[in-house]
Image 1 (cartoon, helix red, strand yellow):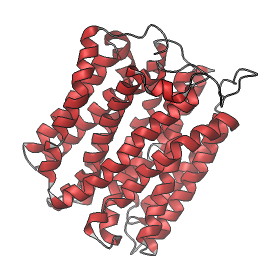
Image 2: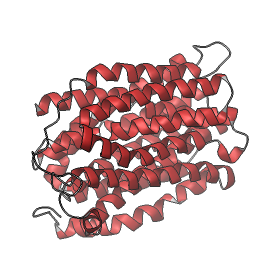
Image 3: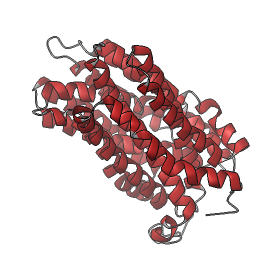
Length: 393
């Protein structure tokens, strides 16, 4: 059952995960076409991340009461709707309608993001990290599908640039529906009242291990979004084409998911803290590369390092979160984790556009170093102390 579910979730990740690269590649560029003010150009990407944050807790609630499969089918339906609304927004030159489409895509993304937890829930002990890593491998396909659809479909509707790319987003969600119908989650234990099961959420959130896991997830995902949102706009501003910017995002997303073949094994061998710390160091290295020049190779290499850093940091943080809850507590803890992470990501993506238009690309990269250091220091301290959970943290 577990192997089949992991395969189903990997394919669904490939289809649903492609929405993110499409929106992030084009959100700022379409924003430049439609927005009434320069500071609002990244609002469509921010709306996508807001949808991820705002949808996390409702998605968790729906899946606790209706089951994961029903929730995932609802999520894919939202994905279909989001692509149609975004396409209509572009065709009608309505900036707010386009933003509504990306917001709903974020609601879909909140279900897609939970695929990693669904895989972990059915694995035991050290196999949890490998199950998470296996599902994230589906992102490799998404890394190819998303940016390529941007390139192939951007002129599919004559006279309306990029509308075809968002129609393709709808098609991917349609394809995800029959795949998700094959998912079969482990049934909850009879007699357990999910709303009151386990410890209070506040008690879990105050545990140092949970705080460190969430902080690493916020920094890994937040900084990745912060720079990935700004990078396509900065590249076009430096004279590169939209296609070159989209390929940069493709290499970035490949960097995000390529290590997933072995990240789980690295976590098992070296421990979560060391792998997470390595991810944060790679994010800092991506900023150093970006500061060294503005040639196409600088942008692309920086984006690849940023993606690699996200993989090690985020998968490690996800695995650490699973140390912090029991089976009965999983829904509320996982939902709160994603709410905190994607709420921070929404703020990061919006401030990225504002800062890019005011202080420039260079200052954005300099800002990465102190943020990484604030989490890296306690993480390295725990790694050196050899901290390992004896049970539920």
